Image (cartoon, rainbow, N blue to C red; front, side, top):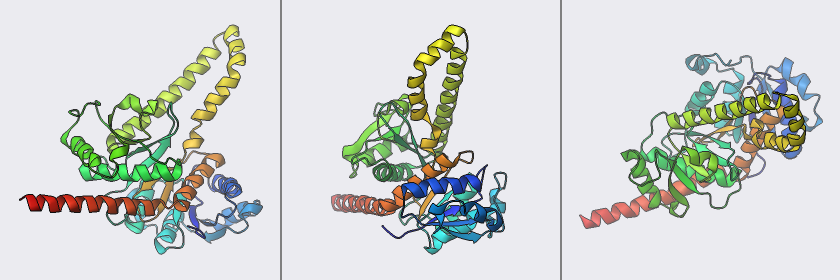
Amino acid sequence: MSGFSLAVDAMGGDAAPRMVVDGLAIAAERHPGASFLLFGDEKRVAPLLAHHRRLATAQLRHASEVIGNDTKVAAAMRMRQASMRLAIDAVARGEAAGVISAGNSGALLALSKVVIKTLPGIDRPAMAAIGPSARGDIVMLDLGANVTCDTRNLVEFALMGDVFARTVLGLTSPTIGLLNVGSEDVKGDETLREAAEALRASHLAPQFHGFVEGHDIAAGTTDVVVTDGFTGNVALKTGEGALRLVGQLLRQVFNASIASRLAYLLARPGLARLREWLDPRRYNGAVMLGLNGVVVKSHGGTDAEGFAHAVDVAMDMVTHGFNEGIRDGLARIGRLETRHGSADADAS
């Protein structure tokens, strides 16, 4: 896909609009042909754009309202001149292929579902993100968009996770696991077991690993981890907390004595590499999968480098035809269900 634009909520984020504009400048250097359509306070954003030659072709449209982090979803739905809403509208009209915002997560999800709508054949969109593991980057979904899920939802999440891993991580045949309380086939509730059976009967069967447990996420047992939004959000926040704890403990250890400070000097090159691996900016950009357009949510507290990574994710999804891959996968599952339905009818 070529000649597309990305809509950007210039006012979303703790340090917006400067962080957003600086992040776009970094992204423009990585993607020279990128086209951006910004929505925000013209008086604040225009001077920032003027400082970046790489953004000379970016279009800016004035937005008179801003959806804050504390804005209730119901109120956000009524703010039709907000920068986030106007950016989402641009995707719905076909002016842009995707939207990126570091603003209010709940508002972005709700507005995207109502305005952009879901892809035909997708029951519910899911929130996905990339994270580190012992074997490389992995994809996990859902991370909070759907607290409860049925079998169909989990199968669709697996399909979307597969396409996401292909388009963003560049994997040719990503492995898929269903998060469960055990790896044995008898573990879990009926919904999980039925989802596993459906995946084994689908075109994803060669990639389906089966059930995985919590420790398999960090181990990188599979490239894609599928779960409901409640469990996924708990796992995500637990992992984030564990990483912060490890960082705090390392600082305490290396500041405990003169000897430990000397040890830090010796270990500093390795620790620098560790920080690079675990840098949260590398994993910035949660994605709403299953919508009729690309929607990327940047962390509100990120910096310019982190926002640029969120732009990278959106660029990869559009360039490599993420939604086209979803449509193809849904068609393959539909053909399989049709054949099974015909066989069942013949048997009866």
